[in-house]
Every structure is written in structure tokens, then in C-alpha cells.
Image (cartoon, rainbow, N blue to C red; front, side):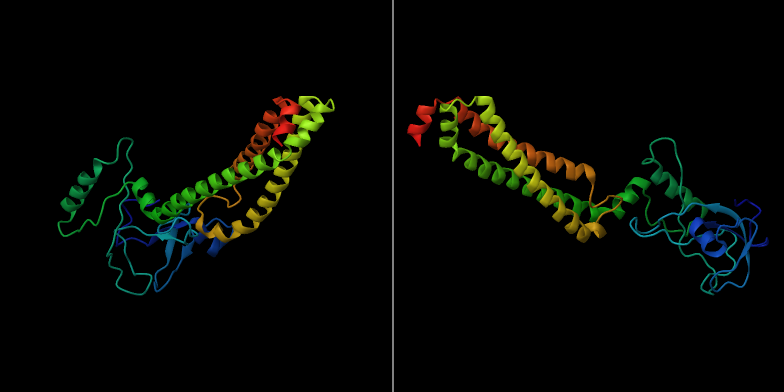
Length: 263
């Protein structure tokens, strides 16, 4: 790691990210080896290896990164003067980080009165700012998804209940011929269960295919999330079962003669 001895008069050193080390050295140990990058003519000795970090976009692949000491600018990677125009400082605290913002800005100005502090954010605020578009899209998608699910439940319940109600005459005849109420209800539930499972299977097949179109909008979430798909499938199956059970039970507890006269 860097130390107070890493200054402009000492040998150039650097800390590299895992992707950078793997790109240049493969699986070999990069510590102690020399690396020359960009427009720099001086080689930098690698003194540390750190994990990759996403600096701009959370959904983008981590860039190959090299870190150099603040007081050892040397040459810039583009062949320029190597002057620092922007510096990011990261502070770690075990308590509430919000009150440290004004204090951190004051410390920077005490060190360099000409320094301009652009902003002070916590890591949580930085992540929120990076994900604002994704979260807005997620909120809208959730609202439209719940609305679509509600419409599907209402429509499915209505169609199934209407179909079972039309069989009231058939149910009355079965009861009149000696069929038990349990047998009649079991038959209705079996038929609605088969129909609902077939419909859910077809819907899931279409969902798996259509999910590819939204994969690019998701971060750290699979478009075929098992929990979401299972929840929707269970809700639709239960809705179909209730839609068939309610009118079937109503017809089963009605006297056959009354049901036939109503028809």
C-alpha cells in the first residue's frame, strides 16, 4: 500500500485493480512488477492489489483501474503535465455520516484555501443518485404490473365464475341422480385447476421469452426472478379455484328442483 515515503522524489508506485492485473499479468502475482501505462514514460512498481470498483455506473462492467499516490503525480496517462484537476476523498466513520459533510468541507479548505468542494455525499446517497432512473422505471413498472395483475384477476374470476354458473343445470341433474356434493365440488375444482395450470404454463412460457427485452433495464436482478413468477402463478391459480368454487358450492347447496326451475 501507499505510505508517506511515496512522494515526488521517490520511485513511482501504483496500486492496481483486479481486472487491470489480470489483463496485464494473467494469473501471475502482480506485486513488485513494473507497469507503464498511457502516455507515461516512467514505469510504476505495483505495491498493492485491490478489488474492482464501479465509479460511474453500477450496471457497467468495472473498469480496469490504476491508483497512484496523490503526492506523486509524475506524468499523466495521456502525456500531459500530470496536474490534478479533480480529487475524490473517501472518509470512513462508525457513526452517522451526515454530520461529517460540513466538517469534511471545512478541513479541505483549511488544507487548501483555493480548493473548491463540489459536493459531499454518503455512499448511500451516491448509490441513490446513480440508480435514480432505474428506481423510477422500477416504480412505474411495479405500478403497471400490479394494475395488469388486478385486471387479470378480475377478468379471470369473472370468466371462470360465469362458465361454472352456466353448468348449474348440469350440477342439479347430477345431484338429482344421487351424486354427492363433495363429488360435484371435486369435479369442478379439478377442471378449474387443470385449466388454470395450463393457462399459467402458457403464460410463463411467453413471460420467459418476453423477459429478454427488459433484461438491460435490470440491475442485480434476473428477468426470470423465481419468486415473482411463482407468486403471480399462485395468485392466478388460487383466483381461478375460488372463481370455480363459489358458484359450484352455491349450486351444490341448492335443491335440484329449485335449480332446475331457475334454469
